[in-house]
Length: 588
Ligand SMILES: *[C@@H]1O[C@H](CO)[C@@H](O)[C@H](O)[C@H]1NC(C)=O
Ligand SMILES: *[C@@H]1O[C@H](CO)[C@@H](O)[C@H](O)[C@H]1NC(C)=O
Ligand SMILES: *[C@@H]1O[C@H](CO)[C@@H](O)[C@H](O)[C@H]1NC(C)=O
Ligand SMILES: *[C@@H]1O[C@H](CO)[C@@H](O)[C@H](O)[C@H]1NC(C)=O
Image: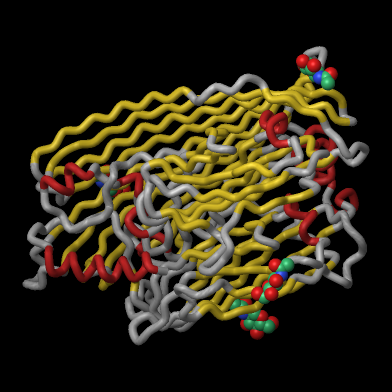
């Protein structure tokens, strides 16, 4: 993609025009395949992202189905890989209780971390990225519960599409070999696992909101370079006209997003005043506040401040070997319940759905899936939206600047509230959606810019309440996410006469915590990583270094608990403990 060439161009400009000794950190680096961290390197390096075990992990699937096998070489600026999808033929008929997507990747040779998206019929199933090189090659496995996309897996009129932006030339030789398989489960959970069975029984009655949608309509690009929309500046809006079936009773938009180029570390970007004042040759500017906007017919219907996923070459690549950063192999997607807008959408006409990035600079990859639940007993659902009010916004920016030192703060809060009723064969139900997010971000520079500190806190909350005509509550979902982040980068020079050679000492602490309540059932996830280390860098190549990452993960729902703690140092796991006993559980 043009923006990748941009990066090389930028590096070149940086080397020529740099009159100032400040590297634009955090940055993206490559740990060459020649740079060995581990003491013994005869085997390929296995990477992993720490996640919870899926309920199906210990069970035998009723069938498996290969979605694609492909090698991604020099794919940049080319159309994505596309192949027709055929539903699994050796499987007994749906509905399947569980579908798991399994991606296996292998590569050898030098390569930057790369971004990838996988779509079925234009509906994005997975946003993922690649691991960094190691002397004897690399491999990894990503498993994702894709049950929510079940309605697609029965269709035979769809294409599977995968884009993995890659550049292969004399220097970057790494080709990614990818296999993607779907595993279908229709197990009798009672027989296989009494604990899980209990879980599903409760799930059956209380988590009706998690029943897969009947129909999923993509809000995606035409696909000359991937089915995502590429957004390179704040004024860029990507729209599609979409007609919603007239028997739709519930609609949820699922947003997929990743950030690259000058916005890969958007949360650490100083304002342009800092760059201008110091005559810096960097494009990583425009301040540190970003927001992905969703509009229907030009009106705001929702927005999201995404979790700052760090790719494997980000900040210090040594942190992310062999355990990658939170979300790097399975980027989170973001749900927005748009049911209150059905009053607008059920008029039989097409409506303009659009995506944009507030303050975004080159480049963001964004698309969305519209999950629709239909009324099977009626071809006509009646709906009406409540009065429309724009979201309330508060934003305060603060700026102190003295040449290369300074501090830049942003405090932002956005709140919105929408409601509407939908009369279907399920009754006349009113849905009210309250959303809010708060962001506080501070970017500061000391020691003539050689010491940089970024502190960010993001808090998001969404409450969806469904009530009957008489006001009786039917369902209440509360979804909260918090993602604190701290990044410290300290640049030391004078290692050699080479002015492109420097030492970076870096600390990263970040977390993705989630709390999801539906009715009485509560699910909580805590996921935190603390990394520190140093590396010797020349241009963007990591020559040597030491690093350690500690990760604590815990998952608790009504019936199961899972926790795992990993410590990794210099490419190897030095501590790994896990437990599936609930700390406060008293049941026999
Ligand atoms: C993909 O599948 C083929 C055929 O089974 C196998 O030879 C290859 O090693 C697999 N590649 C990966 C990356 O798992
Ligand atoms: C699937 O891809 C092929 C080849 O790119 C294309 O000709 C065909 O129209 C696509 N089918 C659908 C349903 O998009
Ligand atoms: C549905 O309920 C709302 C109030 O909850 C009411 O205003 C509306 O008239 C009802 N719609 C129909 C078609 O009965
Ligand atoms: C960075 O991490 C190291 C090791 O955890 C710690 O000793 C040091 O104080 C941290 N630096 C800062 C500035 O927080």
